[in-house]
Length: 91
Image 1 (tube, rainbow, N blue to C red):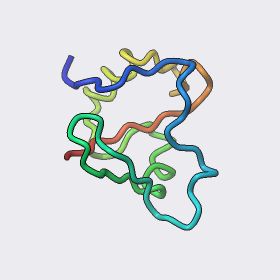
Image 2 (tube, rainbow, N blue to C red):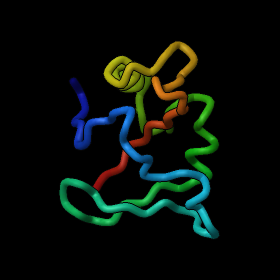
Image 3 (cartoon, helix red, strand yellow):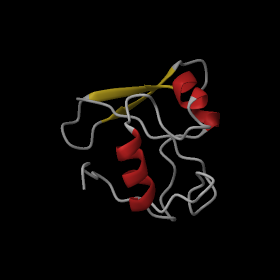
Image 4 (cartoon, rainbow, N blue to C red):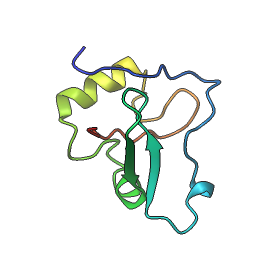
């Protein structure tokens, strides 16, 4: 495995972000579960990358490994029906 999973995804987990939470902000802010620093993800980048399933910070090799690990289907759909977008954030 070439990545570290900090929190296990599961079908019963409540979403950390939904589009209704956007309000007027350009970024989704959250705390790193490892160091508690504040991290941010730009909403527009997530929207722009929804067709590819990953940002340009994620190499194709890593993306394929993430898809296998999280059981992302042929059409980039998660088991519960969502379309995840992977990105790399550093804290």
